[in-house]
Length: 511
Ligand code: XMP
Image (tube, rainbow, N blue to C red; front, side):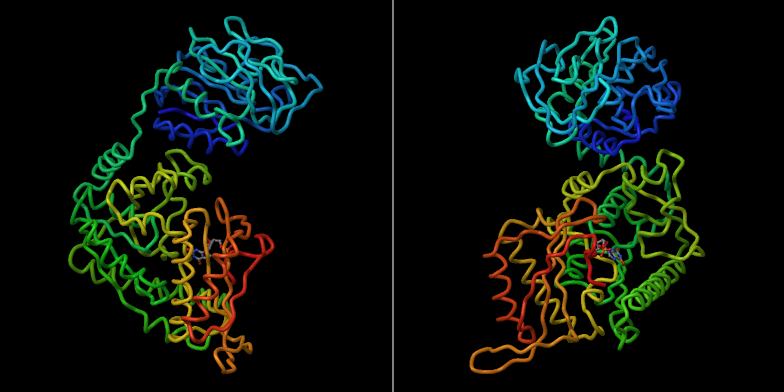
C-alpha cells in the first residue's frame, strides 16, 4: 500500500485515486498519524498531500520527522514538499511571490522524477512560501518564477517532491511524474488491477462471513449490484438478495435486476413486488416530503417482510452495504469506522433489524466499483447507470402519483435516455432527470386539432458528487430530437422545456 497523508486540503482523495490509476493500492491517513503508526502499515511509500497553511504558521500540521528515518520512500506535494524540506534542514521562506493557478515550470535537471518531461511545461500551483534551498543530499530539479526550487529528489534516501499539484488535471505530465516516483524511485509494482481487487475482496469476505448467511438489498444501482456480485463470488448460496420493486422505476430497470443481473451472476434473488401497495399509499399525495416519508416507510415494511420470511428458514447474520471509500474517509475513516453509515444505503433500515455489516466496497472509489463490475461480467447498462434516487419516479411527477402518470413519464424518460446514449453523451452527463408537471396543462396544436396536454422538463446536469451541479449544455440538435420524439410518441405531452438552473440554487431533483 501507499499511504497518502492528508494535510487538510481537498486533494488527498484525488492523490489516492491517481496512485490507484497507476495500479498501486493507496490509503489515506490523517496528518496526526505518527511515524510509528504509518510504519506499522508497512507502506511501500508515503505521499504527503498539500494543505492550506504555511509550514511556519502557529499550529501548522507537522510531519513526524522520524518518518524520514524509517527507510520508507516519501513524496511531498505542495505543503508536503515544503514540510519535508523544513524537516530535513532545507530553507523554506516567504518570498513575497505567491503563485496560484497555471504556472510555467522549467526543468533544471531531469533526474529520475522529471525524466521525459519537456524542458518547460505547465503546472498548477497554490503556494505562498517556497523552498529556497533543498536539504543536503537533495538535487533541485525544477524552478518557477516564484519558486527557486520547485522539485527535488534524493535517490539514495528515496525522497522526492514537487511544489505543484501533479494530481490535478491542469498540471501537465502529472501522472507520469507520479509514476516515476512510484515505480522508479519507490520501487512499487502495479498490481492493483480489477482482477486482484476481486481476489482480495473475495478473501476478505470469506474471512469475515465464514459459513454465515448474508442479506443484500438491491436497488438497481451500481454499488449494490457490485457488492452482491462480489459476495456471490465469495460465498455463493449463503447470499440472498432482496429487490423491492415499488413500481417507481424507469423503463427496463426492474427487468435489468430480475433478469440480466441474475443471468450474469446466478445469485439467489427474492423479488418483493409491492407496486400496488405503493400506489395505494401514495394515492392523492402531492407534498414532496410526505411522498418521501411514505416511500421510505413502505420500503422498510417490504424489506422487513422479505427478511422475516427468509429468516424463518435459517437466521441471517449479515447485512451487505455498498459503502464506498470516500464515505469511509469522510466519516473519520481508517479501520475503526465500521458502523458509521450503518443503514443509510438500504433506505434507512430501522435499528431493531439486528445485523452485522459486511461492506465489500469500503476500500474502493466509484471508478473502481465500475471496473470491478465489468470484471465480474455485469451488464454494461448496469455498470454505467447514472445515479437514480431511491424514491424513483414518484419525486419526478410534480403532483399526485398515478399509474397512468408513471406510464407517461416512463415513456418520456426512456426517449430522453435513449437519445442521450445515441448521441454518445451518456457518460458526460451526471444525471438526466425528466420531470412531469402533472398538474400543469397548456394549449397546443397537433395535426388539425387543439391539444391541452402536460409539459415535461428536461433536467440534464453535470456534477462531480451531486453536492453542486451545473445544467448540462446538451447540443441543440439533440434537444430537438428529444423534444420531437416525446411530443410525437407520448400523446399526453405537448410541450418540452429545458431546466437551466445550477445547484445551488436549484436541487437536481424537482422534489
Ligand atoms: P438533489 O435533488 O438534492 O439530489 O440535488 C442530490 C442527489 O441525490 C439523489 N437523491 C436521492 N437519492 N434517495 C436517494 O437514494 C433519495 O431520497 C434521494 N433524493 C435525491 C439525486 O438523484 C441526486 O443524485
